[in-house]
Image (tube, rainbow over all chains, first blue to last red; front, side, top):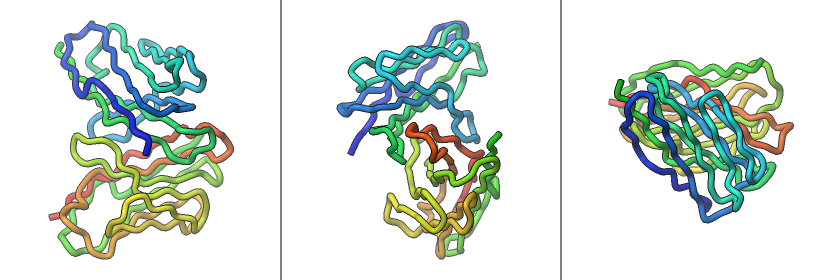
Length: 112
Length: 114
């Protein structure tokens, strides 16, 4: 089946640094989603991408839908302590598909 | 606006005991509903999903089952819990009216089987 490779698995950064993570696949996806999960809570949808090449921002977060439709990245600028958590990418293989494929997550730790 | 609830928030159960976790959604009709399990520090494993009342699709063979007795209610059950059933259980919903499957998650239930 379809799989997503998310990297890095974990990141340890200083407050104020920029962060970049990505998801890649050998399969084409028609929708890319980025979620953030804080400890003990459910994932929260941060950004949704619907078209190849699309670049979307949500505050300090920016995500892009790769032109090949096989990848997506998420950038966080000027990190702050509340950015700590696990970030998941998710892809929808075809429009109308009822399931998502999730990456394994990137755990972000920030040193103040 | 839409809201998704899960209860209980935490649960400690002995091996061999039954399980019932409940998920309800407010503010929408005929949603797609999903149950995921997340082991500590790991990714999300899809267990079941439902596109309508009484319609359940199982993704992983196991001793768990799901039911959807009402449009906005999704229940995860087990007759006899195993140690390996411990984990964080997440319910999610997505609107059926869209071709894009943005899923929205509930707060989760932490299950510990002893």
